[in-house]
Length: 442
Image 1 (tube, rainbow, N blue to C red):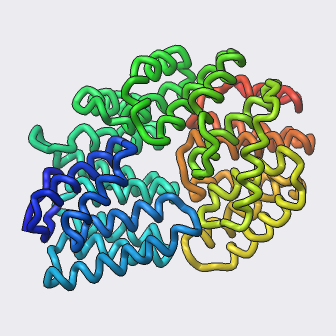
Image 2: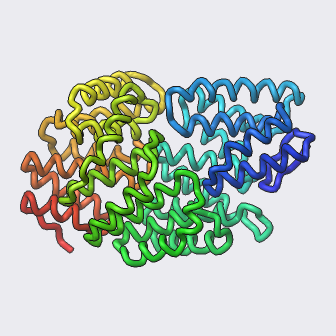
Image 3: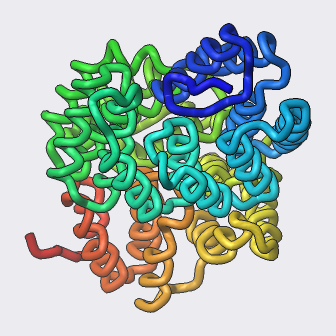
């Protein structure tokens, strides 16, 4: 039995496997492209490395692609078999495998609970903590993220290897609750302790964006570019934040350059990359920027993935891409898949029913005029779709634009009032207000 550098107790007897697995955990924390290779190296050195199989399963699930359900399920089977070979393994390993089972069955919420509860007395054990944070992020469970990160931070000491990474997660959780001063302090400390903590860098950039501090946000991201440009496709997301800040400043040429060079340098179909690109292009067009043929590759990818509703957050961004190019047939088909998903009883089925279907109708123009109660319900349910407040703001803006198109000035005003609780007023929302003659108090 070995305790790795991040506090996890494993049953491996291979030092090589342990070193490789520690590299995988670091890669996960720092969003490095080497993580997958490190997992492979772990399992090559020890084919019965239980935690290695578990991490492989979670890594597949978090990509939220229907074709990866089978590899994730296979990783769970392999993890169970490894436990048997190791005589039941360690308690830490059993908890990881139990959580993976729940996640494979479609309940990320139950999986996160199992991880948090299973490591309640050792909440700074980094791998289960980070996986739980990732699952809750995809669920939009900011409350659960903050509860877990607060507990972990309370138990940090100067000898905790992942101290900076844990603080970075805590900073993001604080930011999602609008506790911006605390988030800024925690995020800056996280990065000072661990310069590779791109999640902490990310949390601080969120604070600047939500407060409307565009110059500070741009300076922060440009100064840390060397760190976040080493990331995997998370670097595209960091560039997305940079693009949003420049868009708010009205520097449209710079936004287009960032889009081409940093947000969409590769035509990938990863849902996170698609979300970055779709939401930024949509904002640019709504701001009067001519984006040329940049929608084309996004719409083609969206059309190919129109039957995939693994993650409703992803499906709705795909829907927006098809709507942008007038792919009516593809959009209608995707809406039908979202409606079918809403009949299921797993996590994403409930998300589809509560927010996916009505938002899909908004994006496709199939919605009926909304009353105040409907608006309140949609905005209240939005966090369930997952992602961050900044990412979900795309849906808030789309909802406001739809209300404006209906001439619903009361609806636009109400959305603005709700939005102001977390985000400083900005150019785009002001233009939507102007279109219906709404002006919110300063």
